[in-house]
Image (tube, rainbow, N blue to C red; front, top):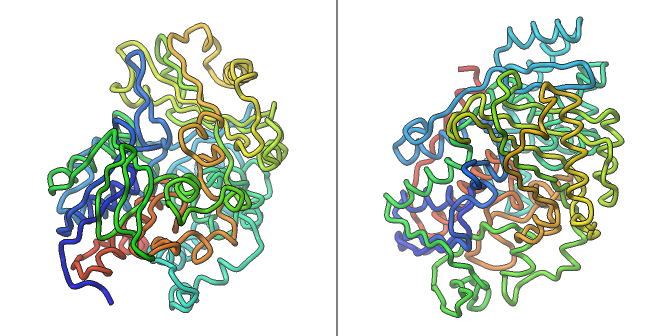
Amino acid sequence: MPSSHRNPHIVIVGAGPGGLTAGLLLAHRGCKVTILEKEGHVGGRNSALEFDGFSFDLGPTFLHQKFCLDEIFAETGTRTEDHLDIVNLSPMTRLSWGDKSLHTFSDRGRMEAELERVFPGSVPGFQRYMDEQAKKFRIIYPCLQRPYQTATSYLSRNLMRALPYVLTTRSVHDVLGRYFDDERLKLAFTFQAKYLGMSPWHCPALFSILSYTEYRFGVYHVQGGLNRISHAMAGEFGKRGGDLRLSTPVKRLVYQGRKATGVELADGSRIDADAVVVNADFGHAATRLFGDRSVSEGAMRRKRFSCSTFMIYLGIDGIYPDEPHHHILFADDYQANVADIQSERRVSEDMSIYVRNSSVTDPRVAPEGKSGLYILVPTINHRHGFDWDAIKEEYADKVLRRIEQRTGMKDLRSRIVAKRIVTPADWEASSIFLGATFNLAHTLGQMLYMRPHNEWEGAENCYLVGGGTHPGSGLPTIYESGRISANLVCDRFGVPYQSVDLASGFMNGE
């Protein structure tokens, strides 16, 4: 039976976006909350990478489904805009295949005009896609807002309605074949599978709603970088009495019988708690932090994991004003590129590249007269121990030459004044299991009830947040994982709360 006391002490391991979300909500609801973060800053993969006067987002750069973030701040009585300077990007992204490019818009009229310009005759397919995916979104989205602790969770009315979309062997790419014939155009609505670290040819069909949410609700930029969201949450957490301890690594969780009762720190001291919320990378936590309930590395490696990313962060002398904020350069043979990544062994020479040129929107991320370029190449995870140190400089040069060839940045390499490279091996060294930056793969066998539960099945009073638990990876779903776990904690200890629902209004076209 749930405890009747209303001021439980909750310890949260990790100050990433999931941990901060859970911590902020729990502190606002009256719980005593301590967040322990091993690094000297907040954010996890949603933190800043700063060097030589430049500031980059370490990880996420697309803020979509902004209403998820709005709901978190709204429950605390504030607005996202009270804390952050947010820009609704228009166009959202430029997508390029060889010499053909498409700009994307959340304004439906502008998007239809752009489609007709680049892919004549494609507008009717787009209209059907948006109308049909809107219905699908209204059915599926509520299923991603609740936990799946038991198999009987599948008997909920919402999920029963969604099952035809969930229990299918069709892929996201299969779905788009109903609307478009041109393979390039299909990619404009399936590349979002990369947010889950998956191939559109293998990503379950229900995730076709990812592209719908962008074309319907837009993509946003936070001035100063998306890492400012983590700082804003940490600030509000502190105002509500939360205790944030940086540079405080946790060695392991401790238990009394089946109950998690606190954590042991790296210095040997112990913090007792009524419940523990774990925001570390799931594979790392399950094999390293769960103490005598840890999972063997062999068992964890048998699970399916996402791809990784090869990152280049560049400080540039000057600004490229004609280059877009977000630009995706597709591989010449995108399907072969994705197959290389899925093999977990082959590094593609014909790579796809994402470039963020945020200085055209944001003056805060680079010194005056300079700009920062964030470059991401989806690639193999580190399951088989590829020797990245041997090739990383050479591979980075290949990536930069391709950018010079396919964009207006013809003199890019000659204007570099600062550079950092992060490889899959580096991600793994930073406590990301197998260097899989998008966590566990989102296969049918690793979703909903089959994904690690928000209340971890390995112990009582232990909860998970982040990309490795339900509902999955990506900032909006990680915020949702934080809220789901906060709700479960409050239900467990009888703490009253009132979540804010803004999404239903959007889903009804308001």
